[in-house]
Length: 344
Image (cartoon, rainbow, N blue to C red; front, side):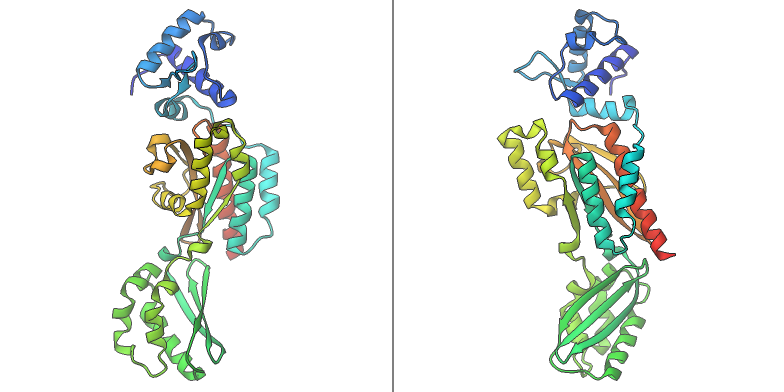
């Protein structure tokens, strides 16, 4: 990446900032009107030409102005931008709407709506990755002669439940024996480890007379894998689509197609290499998936015990990064704090 001098940095900062505010390609005359610049339009045009040559700016064929490239946005975020402080009003809204919610899924659903409303971008919140959670215990409750409730507790405090169909009523003593056996064999393992090795761990008991172990073998993926239906919460679609980028049919269609395929978003969020508690920015071509090349993604992680989930905003590359970064960070930390309080 080129070393930019102070003049180049100032002009690049003004172009990126102005384009974020206006969504209109920025010309030299527009920049020259800023008091802090103190340069003629001709001088600014020369600098803009250099920045374009180095790949920081693009030059739409329909306009004499410039727009930031992915490289320009990246330099702006890493080197030029000053992070805004989240307003007291937004902090109050976030706390007041999240306080009082105790169910994990409800907290995440509310957090997604808040984030979408404040950011006016597409907000995405994924549930904690249950498969990385440590198995604590399993309980079996027979609800009727043909229905069995399985309750799996994770060390972090989360609980997974599943209704299973059985052939006939099972004695309570038999349920207790199977429960004790499974708790002994599975203790201390992650759900993923259990799912991948379950058959081997129960092989010597798979023919027990109630048929429960055989039923567990047949249902191992449902029992010890993620529930995709509760994996993700998305809000803010209407607000994001009201932005200038989506006046074109192409861009509008790309968002709708993205919304129809939540697995893409889940895949991107689950494969982020961000460390817990850090907020990361992924811009345009930095996204590995083609469908996201025209978007930027700001994400952070929250914690539920020893499990982590992801929260973020997805929007056009022309998003207000200085405002979105502290917003995402604050919501993530607030969620983590709520879950920590609920365990005390």
